[in-house]
Length: 272
Length: 252
Image (tube, rainbow over all chains, first blue to last red; front, side, top):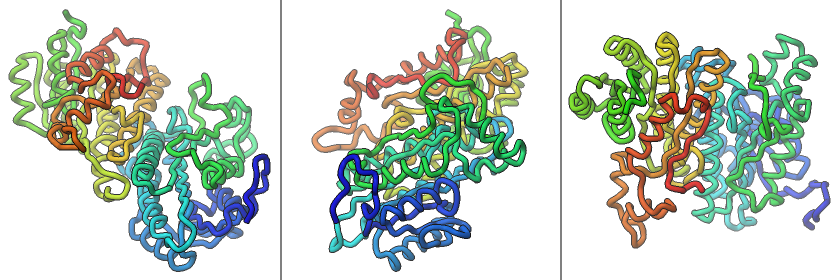
């Protein structure tokens, strides 16, 4: 299959033969990533708590916080797809708007379980699955894409439990990248830091102020003047998942409409 | 000198390492130090040595009730609390492949949850004391990754970001409480002692760690304590939500 050349944006077939898992792939950024990976030719496994009505890819019921669930997911993918090349650790929870003063231990632990431990387990089992991708098939060029947030770069966006969990994802991604490099595993690992994206994580805010008004309010916080659509983050994930980013590992990719690029008014924009 | 005259500082992990060095400096600079630690023997011994300027409270940083007792004990003993140093922590070597979920959670509970609980517990008393300064010990491994310290890096990345949350929250609420993170390189403390005698290639563990630092040596706890003292004092009054690196050039 001829590889697409520079300047060619048609990625159809570029990922054919590759298998991708997208956690939280039934909605929001995960669904957009699943659709784009599918269009590029990858076989996509959507791992989520609940299936979407019109979702892309093969759905597998999955809970990122459960090690047993990870084991059965990897066994299932091994049986059905027979390999693993791309892991998108996208599942996450906002954890509400709790401050240092209002957050209880139970909320803290629940947010860490999904956002931090879930990504830890996702990387751990991804490496296991990618290593077991059989040597008689094309050599694995694995890519792990972890969804952090602008809240993993600077606070002011979201709860203390959320910002701490995204800071953990940012640093564990680098450690995974370095480990895979040292072990010569040919697996890359990067973190993506989206700004405000129009996904169900904002539903509580939409209920409070209405969707269009809410989108305008959150959009105003970004120098670019608007929120992102899920597809725009999906494109970043697709690029990191593909060989086009073959020298990119251990990196922090912000896709935030310049939110973290300069000075900003310190007002929280995640409300729920 | 009295750069912390009559300031009362609660120090988690105060029985050894950076915590102990800071407690000594706080007392030397005219302040009071409450040493909070799981190690009662060492903590009480240091408090006794420091005299009237110090006391000891037992503390497991992952236990919210123990934090409440530590803060209450501090206020009971010295009447207020103006500073908090979250120095308690564990350094564990593991990679993404050999770290278990239980171990990942244990390290994150002590380093990240413990720091969050310290900030949360001290805020009401610090507000009543007229404001103050919180210093959280992150690490150079909260700034950079390491293949051999995956869970530790994650926990210190969490501390780095939660510190900014606390700083912004207190600023928005007009509490007059600042919060900053300190990012030490490898400091010659009990945390890294087990690594110094190991052999890595043809180097001792100590040499291997020393060579990570452009200054060619490990840091001393007193050198980190000096930075912490600056952050606890009014000398740093316009610094909040920031990352203070003390690493012999390691991240440069």
